[in-house]
Length: 150
Ligand code: 4NP
Image 1 (spheres, rainbow, N blue to C red):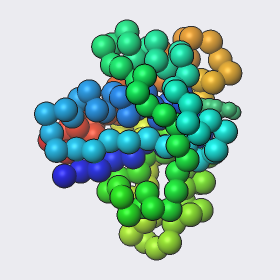
Image 2 (cartoon, rainbow, N blue to C red):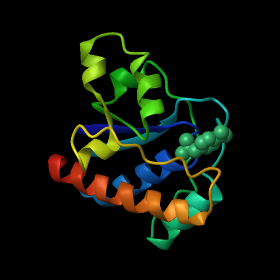
Image 3 (tube, rainbow, N blue to C red):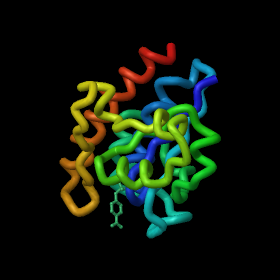
Image 4 (tube, rainbow, N blue to C red):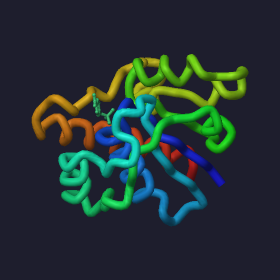
């Protein structure tokens, strides 16, 4: 059993999409996928309609997701914690209790280009194209994740 958490800032744009994409690629595997935000702004909300729309284009349904905030227990509940950008990464790292917690945290795009520390751009204030770009990056990163799990 592999337990994977996707983390962004608001848990309404990038990490819900990452959760949906990885769930879609792992439904034949013993994997738990969840997502959270480092900020509390959007707790309890559905994903952004633009994330719902881009996911739907690829047959992925996000509408049952609700935003929640990242918490310390997530270090115990998950094996791998993927930050969408370097700011999220820094926020998560600021909460680690030990080396074991720290070892679980990585930037998701490091799965495509190891140790490059590139960020999935925040699409919140941009146009719909931003969501397509985010989808494409996350789809490739999730393929790399599945290769490791499977
Ligand atoms: P996310 O995008 O971190 O990908 O969910 C954002 C959502 C909301 C805000 C910023 C980024 N916000 O400032 O409310």
